[in-house]
Image (cartoon, rainbow, N blue to C red; front, side):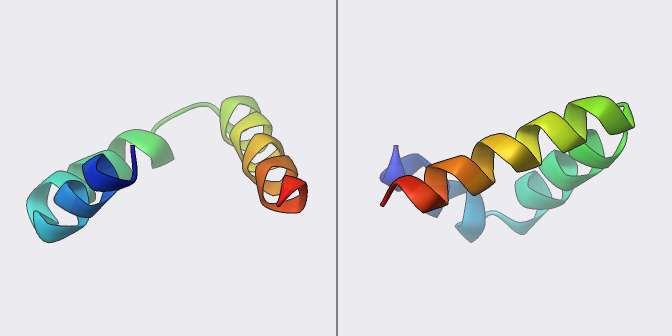
Length: 44
């Protein structure tokens, strides 16, 4: 999974497309994802 993230980071256009897709999502979806990310970081 970490390797997959590294690959995405090394391909700027893919990262930009991912960001564009992320920002085009409804606000509620983004908020839920942010909460999940926040919880995941607190688990460590």
